[in-house]
Length: 114
Length: 113
Image (cartoon, rainbow over all chains, first blue to last red; front, top):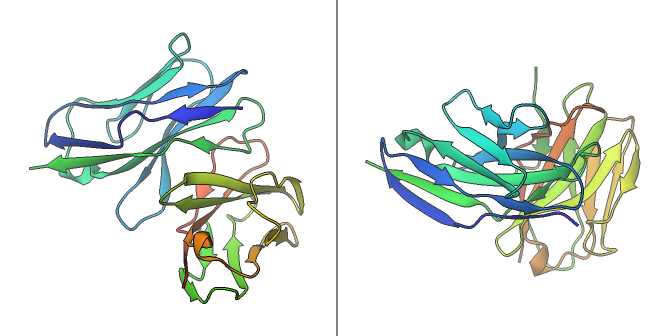
């Protein structure tokens, strides 16, 4: 069975600092990988996803994540964060070709301080 | 177009009562999913529909939980004889049949007293 580990439950950073949110997964088959974001009092929104092809994927608001098969990781990074990036971030995995069941990590609360 | 909608947004009920939670998927999306988000367990998959059939019910935590989908559109998640541990946010998502991205609704926050 697949599983997802987000190593940090909370990550506090100052505005304009870089950030990395870590995600590791385990699966016996090929996977699709996702990062979802949940802003305060809002629903889950897809931030970015890896399905195939280039291992580096980017979002429209400056986040990027790199699929590393050998390390079974899909860490999320941003070179300079804003106050508005404060949210909870969830890493998720589904087995490639049968995406119906997303397995989520426990989430990482990113707090950006002025 | 409209996104996934869920109703009610909040529900407070007494232990032992039955509750129904509703999900309206994005128009044209044939796949529909229910998840539960609770403090202790994080986000958990409950059930998946393809059209009106549910190929995977493996995440339903007990036989008090059931779900149906009619007309390939609206879905209802029913919890019978609610318990305090059922308190959580129940999320619905939908996707096209062969697309990987699931779009989530705002959730129904259930509180069982």
